Image 1: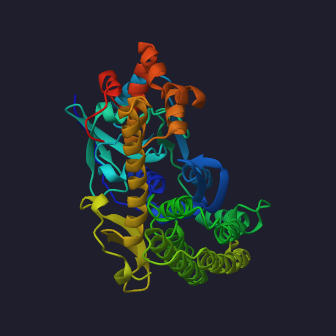
Image 2 (image 1 turned 30 degrees about the horizontal axis):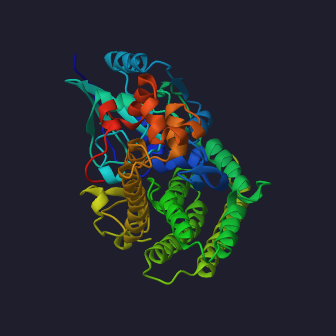
Image 3 (image 1 turned 120 degrees about the vertical axis):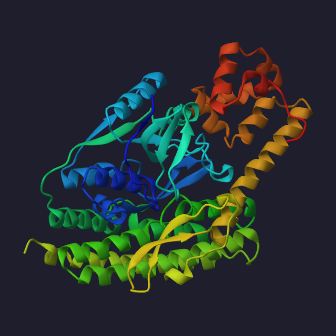
Length: 337
Length: 134
């Protein structure tokens, strides 16, 4: 039986913040992608050489999967339901049941097995997120927030992508909001998230997280062995991909967070937040410059110069550090007025 | 980044798709701007794809020479490596490495072959065969 639920597709930069923004807006809690991402406090920098991803160290610009949805919903007081499944068929039946009951749901999936992505963009990344809003003739109607338009996906492919195994295996994860609070304390939520986020970026006592993590990578780049050009190129290329390709909205989520600060300034009537956000936009521009330079060096269009890359990154770290300090200094002014 | 600085360098990987970036609009506010692609991104994406292609081609040559099972070729062809294939099948890494040897692969049970085929999205017959060209 066909089901088509009314759902307005909207393209966003990032999958997880886009999906939760879509699901909440659908339940009449209108929240933009930047606002969802900002309040979640998922902005970060982490360099984890021990966790390998295709033989490359993990370099993350945002918190791990569910790092947007969980903290966001906690701060807003939204109750979410998360369901995972052992049996793929059971997972598909439950999805059908939710649709039959008129519920639009979010799913975690692998990118590789989703047929609607262009082949060159399909990699084994298990923490993609999308929204299902209907079923028509054995195909599912999908609002994938990183795409311009809603798409369809054949059941077999969707099942396979929901039940891939390995790191961050989705286990068929399906989620939806159960209860939306009647009143939301945005001031408290925004203040709390800024406090946590700036604290993490500046004061995490681990040298590979936050601004110190950026500096650590800068040092690593300077010290790369000159005779391992092939590996070095792959490593640098990998870093740029993590920064730009995986739906970050540009500059590893920095522009997205700057947009959040602007919207928070409006919502709370506190203009300085928007001005502080400009500092992050500037840091984001530096990230993009770094990416362009690094890509050109990988391709051999510019001469490989590890020192120059390290210096560029050090400059990014300086800008970011100044930004987080300035933002943190604004916290007392955000107390309830 | 200003709106008019958002790169519009059509990337072939996008196949005409556009993705959303955030940039400053005419009024100096951050807004979603669609981008057709960016040179920097295309370079590093190509690099990653070419790397898998090169690995698949080498594995193809090895399989031709009888030094490796077609499984190795299919693994790289599906953009996996030994670590990822081990995670996706539940086998140990050392088992996967062993199974890449033609003699060992030939003796694998139907159940084990089916696990590989499933993880790689292939039929068992396809898994056992090596295509003419990589």
